[in-house]
Image (cartoon, rainbow, N blue to C red; front, side, top):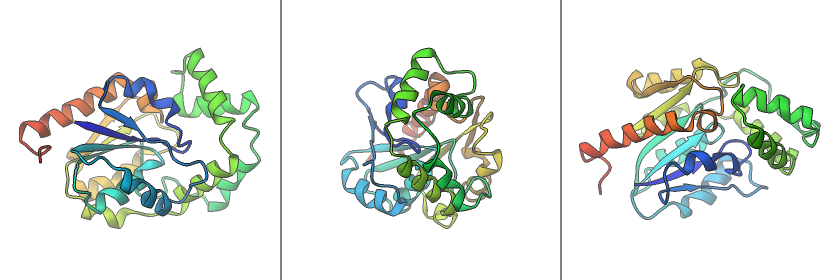
Length: 232
């Protein structure tokens, strides 16, 4: 089964290679155009690129609303939706202007990226991951990060959840400092509590606990496959 993986705010997919390696030959990581920040624009860009074979869409954090928009339009070959540490509406009640602070954060300054890394990875970042994170983040335009965060703080896609009828799974990071547990409430309301699985992980659940997340995802796909819901 093909897996299409949508990365978070950075849009590079650079931090997802260890997770994707668990699914050799089947996991495609999408890399967003750097200039593209609006969910509507990303949807228009991504939809024609979706596989013309059965696939599962996995969306991390920022990408959750993008995946929701795509799944609500019922692409022909989309068989299931998996959201990880994500949300359908702003996860915290912050004003949109907050996002503009990212435009003045010195991302090339290592203490700044160390703080960001501590927030998203907790104590789980290896020395190699810390170096890769710093090198990748400093190369992303701050305006891109700010404008994508503004989308997070102003977009509400809860009305689309009832339109998604394919099987779905929500992996909740129980130690997430960015996305609170209450972000799962719209999914529970529309899809039922059975769709929720908890991973004892920080916000970067796929990066800090790739094996555990992969097991949940494999079990989910195996169960669906057994009843024929992932076949054309």
